[in-house]
Structure formats: structure tokens, C-alpha cells
Length: 578
Image (cartoon, rainbow, N blue to C red; front, side):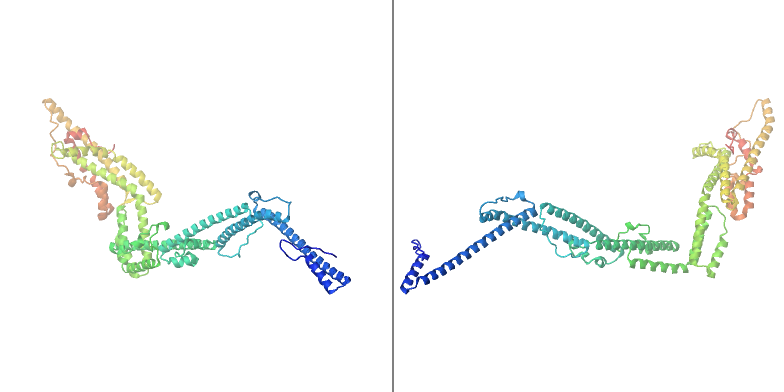
């Protein structure tokens, strides 16, 4: 094979032609045969073909690699645009012509941009998901679910927005839970302060992170912590309620014992911190240490001390209660025998067969029943008092009408005139008062199945006797007036014959000052009041005698004569009934 080559005049390098020429010269000089020369040239040609073949194979391999790279780039571009979902926001080339390298060069910028966006998106997803996982772990109570893995197959903004919305919801839930935790902690603090408990040990027993030294954001907000806090608050509230109930019971006992033994205010002031909550509700007790155990124990010790002191002063206390009972009966005008009761109390205490508390409780029960009975008698007793007052005014009016100087210009005469007018109106209502009293008293006796007694005397009997005597008195007055009129008639005829008549202003009988009947007839006192006062001295017999004396006909004679001597008495007679 003949190969002719020339030297490259530009670079002056050795070419294949120069080398073959040089080889011909050598062969000529050596004297190689043509066969040998052909053989060597064939060998050189084969070696050149092998070299070209290798180069072609390498070029084909390089082209295949470029095609694979282009294919991978195309697939990566498709995957990225699918994962990011932002094809419309990025300039992605749509070129399928040109060389492979031109196609790769066209895809490379878009691919690089998508890779950068993917990395940013993955970081965003990772940040959001890590926050979500952290909050979920806090709510779950610190349970670690392992590192979170970002799903790179879907990195779209829509999915990122979903995660962000979920994160916002969890952040709000965390904020609500944290607020609830802080409220629970504040409630525990207030309750511990009132109960005198150690707040730090109480709250850290629920969870160590609830210590005030820790920041707000580091506090546990798990379901378990909230449940334990709620249970702790409930337990403390129940404890507070029980302690308050116990303290109020002790305060009531203290107050009763103080009142029972007339304890001075100086000693009572030492326990003002106990008695100040005697009627307070649970929510009203907010003072620090108000329900501490040492305070309750102090009150218990004082109650025990007063109980022992009460036992030693049992007689004094019992007699004090008996005096209170007697005063209730006295105000209600109920007759009792205090000497007998006091002797029985003395014997019970001296014998020691009755517990002091039982005796006092029995006396308290008697006092309560006495108050109830006094209350049931109150309406009738008020009417009795009005009746008694009316009877007093009637007695005063009778004395006033007998006073011949009542119209003189003496000091206070105008006041007596006004009182007399009011007394006449009041006296006119006595009959109605008595009738109402009788009706009320009978109704009371029917309801209570016992007789209504006033200082030991049946009230109905007193009213009946009063009504009867009053009627006898009115009958006697009318009879005496008629008798007097008959006696004066002859004198009137005789005086007419001589042309003269007596002066109406001149009294027939001797003058008597107001109140002279207080000693003779006893009308200055009301029948019921005199009867009541005499009951404690002479019994019911003296009451009846006194009432008979008040309204006896012999006393009424003088009254009628006195009335006849006064022209005002003739003009305005005092009637017992309206």
C-alpha cells in the first residue's frame, strides 16, 4: 500500500507520509524484500484499523452516554415540574431537534433552576413538618415518633399550604392548651395559698416543667398534664370545701361557747381569723392561710378548752339558760314554777347521770319551743295590751270627767282636753276589742288544743267576767240615773212655784279631785293589769275579787253621783260600748 503524505507546513510535524517515506528509505538501505515489505505494511494497516475502531467505539459510547444524560435530564425535568407543580412559572424548553449537546445545553438552565426550587421547597416542607411533629409530640406527652421524612414526590405549594394551615391549627391549639395550663397553675397557686400548702412541690408533682422558674413556652401541654392539673384542682377545691366546713363548724361552736360563758371581746378577737369566715362561701375565702391546718388545729384546741371550761361552769350556764327561758315565758305571760325547775336542774347536775351537752341541748330545745309558743301568742298578747291601754284611758277619762276644774285655765288643761277626746274614741272601741280578743283566743285554743292563759288565768274567763261586770256597771248607772231623775222631779216642781231654779254650774255633792277613786274604787288600774299583778301573790281567787271590786255597784254609785254633778258629764256620758 502506497501512502504519500507531505509535511504539514504550518506546524512542521511528522505525518504518516513522512514516516512511510522514511521507512522506504530504511528498507531500501537494508534491502528488504517486497514480500517482507508488504507484510509489514499490512500489519501497520491492521494496527491503524484497530486504532480507528477503538476511537469509533469510544465515540459511540460517548454518544450513548450523552443520550442517556439527555434522557435522564428530560425525565428529571418532568419529575421536578410534576413534583413542584410550577410548569407555568418556569421557562422549560420544548426542543427535540439539534445536536445532543445543544439539547442538553437548552435543558440545563431550567433543570438547574428547578433543582434550586426543589431544595428550597424541601427545606420549607422540612421546617413546617418538624414544627408540626414537635407540637404533636408536646400534645402527646413527649413521645418521639422518629425523624420526619419529606415526601419529595409532591412538593407543590398547595400541599405546603395544607401543612401550614395544619401548623397554624396546632399552634392555636398549643396556645389554648398553654393558656389552660397557666389558668390551672394560677388556680393551684391560689388554692395552695389559702390552704397553706407548698405550691412548688404541689405543681411540680404534676409535671416538673410547671415550675415558675421555667419559661412559659417550655411548660408541658400534654393531655396527661392537663388531666392531672384538673384532678389536682378538683382535689384542692374539695379539700378547701371540707376545711371551710370544718372551720365554720368550729367557729359556730366557738361563738356558742363564747355566748354561753360571756367570754370578753378581748379573747374573742384572738380568733377573728376563724370567725370571720363563719358564713362565707367557698369562693369568698381568698386570704392566704385562711384554711391552713395549723389554724384549724388551733381552733380545735380552743374548742376543747372551752368545752372543759363549760363542764366546770355547768350550773352557771344551765341557770343562765333557765333564766332566758323564764324571761321568754314572762314576756309571753305564761305562768311557770321556776323554783321547781331550778331544783330539778341542780339535782341532775349533782347526780351526774346526764351529760352536760344533753342537758344544754334539752334546754335549748325548750327555749326554741318557748319562742315558738310565744310567737304564736304574740298577736293575742298585742291585742290584750291594746285592750289594757284602752281600759287605762277609760279609767283616766272617768277621773277627768269628775274633776270640776278641768275647764279652768290651768297649765296643761288643753293637753288634757286633747287626751280626753282621744280617750273617748278609744273607749268606744273597747267592746269591739273584747269581741275580737274572744274570737282570736277561741281560734288559738282550737288550733293548740289548750286553754290560753294570761299569767295563769284563762283569758276567756277574764274576758267573760269583764264583759259581765261591765254590763252590770252600765245597768247600774242607768238605774241610778233614773232614780236620781225621779228624786229631783219634786224639787223642780217646788222651785217652779216660787219662780226660781237651781244653777246648773253649782255641784250637788262635794268636790273630789281627779284620782280620788284610786283609793276607794280602784278604777285607776285596768282590770286585766291588776288581775295579772295579783296572780303572782294571791292566785286566781284574788284576781276575781279584784275584778269584782273594780266594777262593783257600790263603787259605781259614787261615780254616777259625781257624773250628775257635772254638766259636761250629763251632756257627754262615757259609754262602755260604741
